[in-house]
Image 1: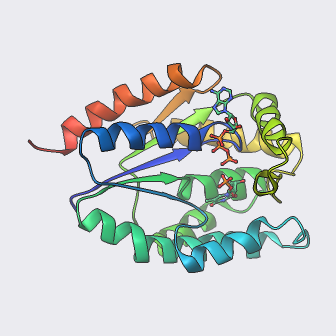
Image 2 (image 1 turned 180 degrees about the vertical axis):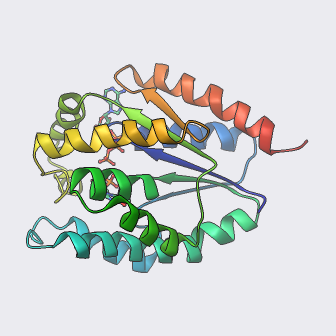
Length: 218
Ligand SMILES: Nc1ncnc2c1ncn2[C@@H]1O[C@H](COP(=O)(O)OP(=O)(O)OP(=O)(O)O)[C@@H](O)[C@H]1O
Ligand SMILES: Cc1cn([C@H]2C[C@H](O)[C@@H](COP(=O)(O)O)O2)c(=O)[nH]c1=O
């Protein structure tokens, strides 16, 4: 496969989308063919599944259904969109991927980690990111950012079913991301996201340039 697969992870409201867009702009300026996508979502079917998962009205959703719905969304996303893009040599920037299932469903909800990994591996046919940036901020900071964003009155930015969970849950998720980074130092870079947008972008872009040098022969 010729393309490069880069994922952005971290707690809700950490600033993933903001940074992903900046990286996409820089890459496009250099003439790279970039695909920006997200999980859950990215395809018609995956987006329909996303709306079921995140709907605050679905409060009775059991953990098993949650794991499988994320996996179903991922399966469609990987096979319909991501793999063809990578095969075509594109750079794929994805807002969340398998690490989110491990952090949220295993560390957050307590679902068996080997089960979550195994279901995710099946869904993605073993696809793994080349590089993952974990945006790390204290939970109070990320939740404050989300609350501020929700306060803008834009109905698409209201807190979803996962974002509405309590601080203890979000703290377990953050700790989960730290553990994932410790388990995969060759792939994962933890970024201090409790800084200005530009400072964070500078760190990520520096690493990205190195990644490009390693993966793209000129
Ligand atoms: N470094 C930063 N400092 C302060 N505010 C920020 C920073 N980065 C992003 N924000 C703001 O915080 C909010 C959340 O940012 P963003 O949507 O990028 O986060 P996210 O991690 O993608 O969120 P979600 O988990 O909902 O996808 C937005 O209102 C954004 O403008
Ligand atoms: C892929 C994936 C995501 N989640 C959670 C993380 C977030 O709370 C939402 C997605 O919303 P975002 O605004 O697009 O970040 O879903 C999860 O729990 N498990 C997953 O596998």
